[in-house]
Amino acid sequence: MGTLILNSLEIRRFRAFDHLQIKHLGRVNLIVGKNNVGKSNLLEALQLYARTASAQTIISEVMETSKEIRQPSKEITCVLVPANGLNREKIIELWDGIALAGLEGEVLNALRFIAPGVEGLKLVSTPTYNGERDLVVNLASADEPLPLHSLGNGIWRILGIALALMNAKEGILLIDEFENGLYYSVQPDLWRFIFRLARSLDVQVFATTHSWDCIEAFQKGAIEDHQEEGLLIRLESKKGEKGVTLYSERDFTIATREHIEVR
Image (spheres, rainbow, N blue to C red):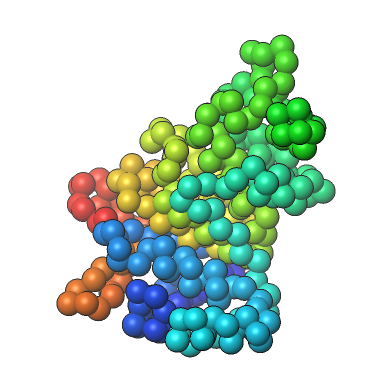
């Protein structure tokens, strides 16, 4: 088990949080809780922490929010996959980011969770975008390459998560509303993929969800990975104060088996 960037987390006077303390974090962390409890705010705080900001940026943030913001001691790579997914330009940027890393095969492995016949993926200039580059995919069942987006939102979502993970090497990956665009039966394989690559690339992962299917899929990925810890983090609001309940792999295995509500 590698060294984590964050073993614990404390947030003071930021967005929805007056004071939030999470005393323990895992390699892969799934954040749950009711609407407006602060799940996305937690990702925002992590992203802001990881950013190597100039003094002027720090001053600007403080003036805008009237909050105390502390810089990390060194630059931390941090990649965010928003709830509505990554746009084409960002996907292409991330694809370029792994071009020399020898990880193209892992991208294809991820795409095959939805499209088992995927044989190749490449960037080409297309008239659709006035000669700008677009991703096309080779399928065993098709004579000609197809635009990747023609295969649906799910495969685009998986591609975004896979590329973000690979570009977050030795850093932090943030995924908001993990389940968006993903059929429930695909999610266990994707979580296994995330656990495996998070370990090999030394990435710490934080994702949010509203979905019980996502929690069950996360449990399967976590319990099968014996080297890295998966942690379920439940944010709660009691009498206007934010609190946290942590579920270890054993805890949320029992919860999913017994259908105990943890969302």
